[in-house]
Image 1: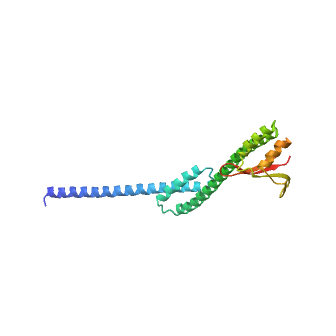
Image 2: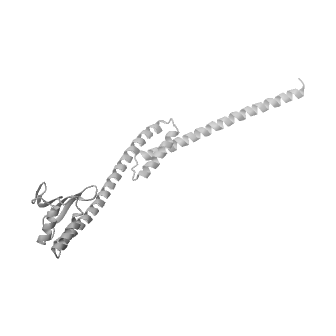
Length: 217
């Protein structure tokens, strides 16, 4: 082998050696980068999960945001033991928090609806009392009869029971002799006295009164 061939062979060997070393270095760098990224991802997951374990939530939006973050962490499929343990704890806290907040919201909504219902019922009581009072204050029998006809349109029938409470001691309630809507309205027209206080009433699906309970003055 001449000197030129030997030199060429040495150069080729050197190039191959450098290329191999370069490939090995690139692979090592890539592995180190992957390990660093995994470590950073694991550390961030641990920190976020720790923050969620004992967190007290004040809204469902907060819960939803952390539920989304939890699902993201779970998608990493991290093999870290602490992460796995924290995931279980966070899932439990999020579930309990969601249930508690949903229950609270349901109770608040129910209370709001009850309050609105009370406002409507009180307004209806005033309307009923207004008609009864007008009958009692009618100037003539004819006028009173017209008002009775108008008032009866609020009842499902003229025979709707009217109960007048005369005694109430908690569980013990006594009523005057039962009467009907028709008879009570005619009574108001005849005796010209203020109506008894309206305590409560029941209505059917058509909004007609099916029972009227009064409290004697």
